[in-house]
Length: 347
Image (cartoon, rainbow, N blue to C red; front, side):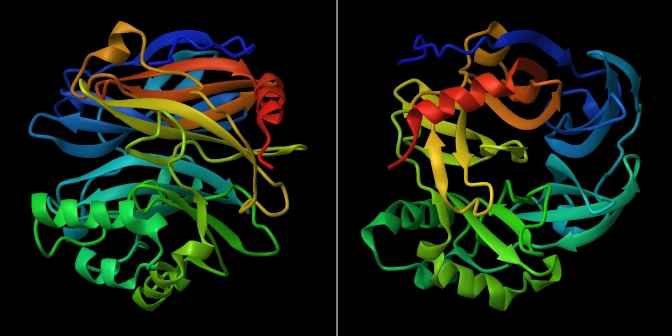
C-alpha cells in the first residue's frame, strides 16, 4: 500500500462530525452525506440506517462546523415500491433556482437512482426513478464488444450469480453538474466499474430507450475507467463537481481489492471547463485514505466515501462516510488541490 505518499497539500482532519443516535431511524449508522452551503449554513443530508439495514434520508444543519439543528425524524423516507428497502447516499445540487436531491433507491433486490426537487433546502417532492430498469442480461448484450468492457461484463455476471439471474443493471452515484453546459444537463453516471458522462435536454429524456442507446454506445460516454494502483476494483462519482477557472474539480471514490478486503479511498480529477467529458488531470495517488480508527473500523472497515463538499474562501470541506458507520470531514485549500492536479496532466 502506498498510503504514506503525501502531496504538498495540507489536508486537515476534522474528525467525526455526526454519529448515530437513539432515534429509531438512525440507531445503527449514519453515512455518505450530500451537502449544500446556503448563506453560511451547511445543509447536510445523510443516509440514516436503522437496525435491519433499512435506510432513510436524515437532515441536519452546520454553522462554523457545529450542529445547530438536527431532525429527530427522516427528511425523506420510503413511499414507493422502488425504494421499499431504503433511500441511500444523497447528493444535493442547486441549479437554476431549484434544489435537486439525487439518491439511491433500493427495493431489496434492485438498485436505481431517483431524485427529488425543492424550492428550499427543507422541502422536496419526489420525481421518481431516472436510471434504467434493464436486466443485467440485456445490458451485457448491449455493451460494446471491445476488451476494455470485459470488466463491465464481469460485474454483470457477478451480480446475476450473487443476487438474482434477473437482477437489473446496478446503478448508483448518478447526479447532475451544478451548471448547465450549452443549455443541457450534464450527468455523471456509474455503471460499474467505471464512470460515464452524458448530456441531456431534460431528465425526462432518460427513458428505457435512451438507456439502451447509452449502453450500446458506452465507449463514447466513458469519463474514467479504473486505471490507477488503488482503483483495481471500481471507481464512482463522489462529490458534485466544483467549478474553478482551471476546470471542474471532481472528487470521486476509488476501490482497491486487497488480500484483507476492499479499501475505499478518495481520489481527484480535473475536467475541462467547457467540455467536462475531457479529463485534464488525475491524481496518481489517493487524495486521502482510511487511516483513522473510525475509518479503518465499522460496518465496512477501511472506507472513506466522499459524497459532499462545500467551498468557502478557498477552503474545501469534504464530507464523507467513515467505515460505513459515521460521517467525518476533512478540509484543504481548493487552490492547492488545483495546483497539485495541474502537476499531473494527461497528455
